[in-house]
Length: 214
Image 1 (spheres, rainbow, N blue to C red):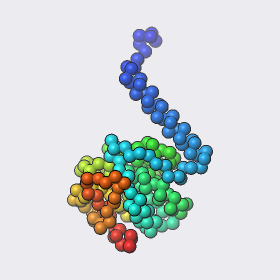
Image 2 (spheres, rainbow, N blue to C red; image 1 turned 180 degrees about the vertical axis):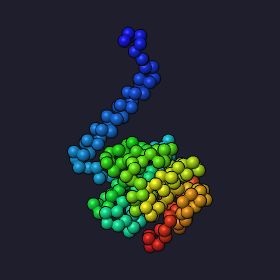
Image 3 (cartoon, rainbow, N blue to C red; image 1 turned 30 degrees about the vertical axis):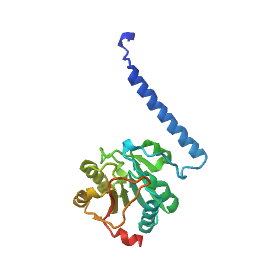
């Protein structure tokens, strides 16, 4: 092959590739360091990425949802956390080895949690490992965007994963969509965030979540 036939990359594409590989290497280094120090279960804090519509729960909300998981999950049970990454470590730490916790998340920073992390893009709602279908005793989801499309596609994923109980934390304005798509009922309990948001948030479930929290 002549040199003229070798495809060349534009400076912009080359720079993007360099950035991609640099991020990959950085994640790999972090993961290896945490593995070597036995810290994969530590509470690794990342800043909110507003471009990904990330807004972290406050401590009271985290504690409440951990309580729900603890009370509902049987021994050797399974819980899936969809697009709510800050719940992962508190739930994992509280449950210990008595149950399995899986995080489905778009933000690859959370790959540091190793095998418990599954990359998830709500635009591809059924792109999931086949062995996960209908295996989770409890699914908790916090769809990243307050849009009918996002709620609809996330609901498809929930239906594929859930065996029984479902919890969704999202904007109050999505109430009708959630009732129609999944038959969930609005709870008295309201999720709160570290940074106060303009949109009112609500919690929805297909069981009496408020009774569980009493």
